[in-house]
Length: 251
Ligand code: PEP
Image (cartoon, rainbow, N blue to C red):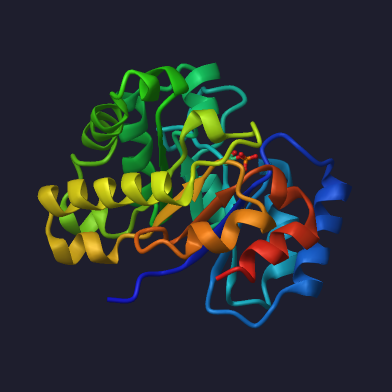
C-alpha cells in the first residue's frame, strides 16, 4: 500500500504578511517535480494570499495552524473551520504541543476540534508526542497512546481514514535535537500498531504519519527513509525556502 508522502511547513507566528508572500513565491519558484504533497501551514492572515500564490501547483496545499471547535459565534479572536474552508485551505494542524502547553488544549478539546475539521470536509494534521520528562520515565508510549485514544479514536474508521498524524516529541521541537531515525521509526511503528488495533491493518497501512522535531536538510533523508515515517512536519526549516525545498527533495 502506497501512503501519501507529505512535507508540511509550520510557520508558527513568524513572518509578516509581505515576508510570508516572498517565502511562498520562493518555494513555488524552486518547487521540484515531485510526488510529495507539500503543505504550507501559515499564519491565518497569510493563508488566502499564499493560497493564491500556490494555486497552480496541484501538489502544494495550505493549512491553518489552529481552529475553534465551534462553527461560528461570540469567540473573539478565534477562527472557524468554515472560515478556513472559505479561503481554500484544505488542512488544519490540530493539537500542536505549543497549543497544548501554552493554550491549555486538552485531549477532550482536541477531539472536538478534530470533529469540527472533518465535518467541514477539511483534513486534520493531528499532533501527538511526549515531553523529555515523560520519555525519561519511559512512559512515552503510554502517553502517546492516550493522546490518540482521547483525541482521535472516537472517530469511525471512514472519518479516521482522512486524518494525518504527526508524531512530534516535544524535546525535539525547536531545540535542534532530532529524534534518531531509530527512535522515530520505533514510535511511528507503535502509532501505526495502535491504529491497526483500533481500526484495521488496512486503515493503518493507509495512514500517513509525519515526524516533527528539528527536521532539516541534513537529517531529512535518513528520517524519511524509515519504513513508517511518511514525511515531516517542519517548523524552523520551513521558514527558509532553500531548506524547505531540500527537505522536500530528500524523499
Ligand atoms: C514544529 O513546530 O512542529 C516543529 C517540528 O518545529 P521544528 O522543526 O522547528 O523543531
